[in-house]
Length: 131
Ligand code: TYD
Image (cartoon, rainbow, N blue to C red; front, side, top):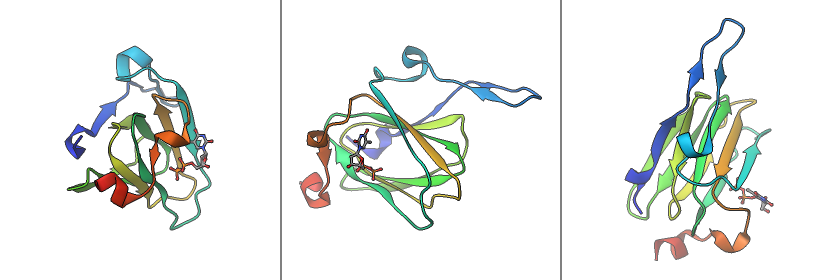
């Protein structure tokens, strides 16, 4: 798996003077069956989330509010991607090391995932991931 597989997904945007609306549908916009959603919020300034890889779990990460950066790493190259629009998601396949940083105040990261939570699916040591 390489970081080239990490791709932006643009969700529909229904512009409206009353406020905009976006949505996602499993088969239309998400390239996997959605088994779980979780969200990360109230991140203190300077904190880093993530710092692991998954063996099987695939994710789409959306900055529903505010902004943050995602660093994706395949063991040989790294790319830092900024998310700051609620109608874009970043697809991160299994087998990519990633962490999230530079969270803005009141930012909200929303993640849809292909697997239910399982600690056995995590690789939390970068050296083990690399090897
Ligand atoms: P973790 O995935 O390590 O957070 P991050 O990657 O954002 O730094 O999860 C932190 C803790 O939350 C860990 O103890 C496992 C637990 N957790 C669940 O119980 N269910 C979940 O869906 C997730 C994502 C985490």
